[in-house]
Image (cartoon, rainbow, N blue to C red; front, side, top):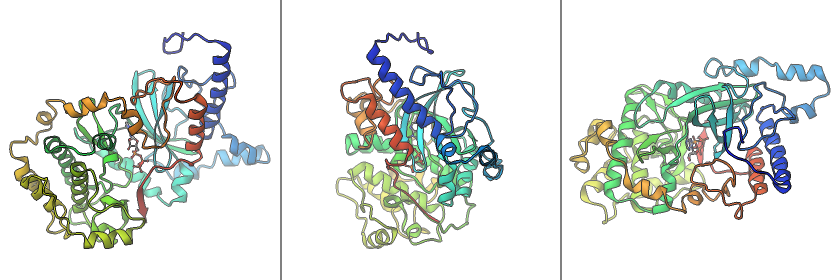
Length: 432
Ligand SMILES: Nc1ncnc2c1ncn2[C@@H]1O[C@H](COP(=O)(O)OP(=O)(O)OP(=O)(O)O)[C@@H](O)[C@H]1O
């Protein structure tokens, strides 16, 4: 019987494979700062039971003796600089976390799917190496992410559940959304009809308007950052680039995801909350047509030139109310752009649409639930990253064990590559 009550029948080959897998996981977890006692096998059916933080092996091997080790490991500054936003804890910081697999490779570190055994709940945990935060000079931004996300509670905004730090890593934990993100479904279906877009737009517009009322600008509204509930409703996520900005305030940092960035952001500001409404316009345009009005360029100067020249004429296939909505969102002059929830709600496109979160969520988004069942979803969710099925992991991101298509070895190679940063997927920009 496995730790979770599942039956496990072993033969010698399986056992050898498990040992190899276990040792690779041991290396991976060790580099995350997780200590694994030598007698403890790590695998999908096993919890990490040891809660002490140990020294990763790469640190051990580079140190001459116990004194240096003591110095490195107890450096208080490396902890203090992330306080109080990230309380210091030993891993896993909670009773008995079980790592179930990978969700994605984030910009700064992997996002893992974990199960809290005591609560029987599944979470997504962003694991961010502190060295990466310092190297990229985004210490304040990393704190801002959790300050902001802690502050907000809204039906269409993804909640922060917990965050903490160990000596070398930051952890940001949210509920796990097994339905995945909007980008996956866009890749699957190519284009969404206006009925579905009406619900999506109302939900995202409500979330953006709510954040702005709280004096928060998101700055990275894009399909990948829109998660879906079990019923196919939207949850705006990833506050990694968001910041507090009061009404009338101005920002100057060039950040976001290039194809979604408003012209005033691309030019280095000043910009304000209106930039999020532009991103929403781009997102809706892409959902409706299957492509971005201006495809991404390699740098923000080229992108700005293209955006400035592009006429943003709406395709004839759009209904007049939808074309009008997008024309108002994709207005290059921020002061004339549709940039309040009140004006958004009054659009003809939304006639008859309730902007009440309970009414919006009353019925499931059938289209998403149907697409969720399609067998090609797991592959689409992987973004071509070779995030292949975890053959015998409880990775319910649509993966079903098919050990003939992917060996455990390949999966573990991927784990190692992810940890070493050899696999990249992020397109978010941060030009401080
Ligand atoms: N709670 C969650 N449940 C399910 N999937 C998630 C969750 N959080 C994140 N993901 C998946 O991981 C991807 C990356 O997450 P997120 O955007 O938060 O990380 P990031 O480090 O900021 O990366 P990026 O720069 O690519 O946005 C998302 O597009 C989504 O597919």
